[in-house]
Image (cartoon, rainbow, N blue to C red; front, side):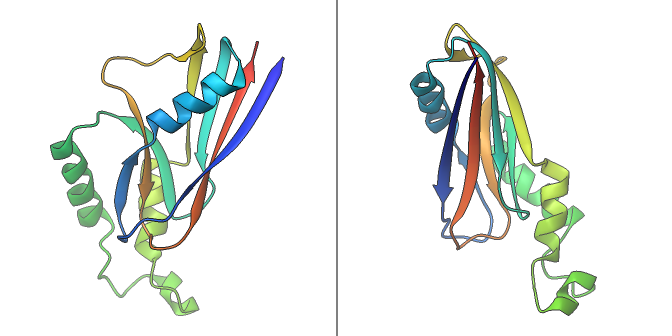
Amino acid sequence: MRSHTEYLWFETKKRHEYLNITPQVEKAVKKSGVHEGLCLVNAMHITASVFINDDEPGLLRDFEEFLEKTAPYDVKKYRHHATGEDNGDSHLKRQIFGREVVVAVTQGKLDFGPWEQIFYGEFDGRRKKRVLVKILGE
């Protein structure tokens, strides 16, 4: 069995951003030489997420609106803020969108359903963060 590990690094300009990282993950799969296996992609920071969805601008704006209604930034009631932080909402947003995705690798390519793409969701940006890409298989 082969194993290949890469780290993708991101530093967003805004507090919240959604980046389509599918091309970077596809490059890692190709580089791995794995033809049949699995690809794990996960955010290595507790205020960021990796998820799969459609790359449609209206939908991405809907995500942001939904998350702000569910865990708004401006609420002063987060107990986490007593530690001196101001990102309690970001931790909750990460819990909603999740930490990682696993995608099958078939014939050397990511095996997606229609419209599926891999996204990095940043909820507390403006600093350098990483994403793990781990490919296992034959």
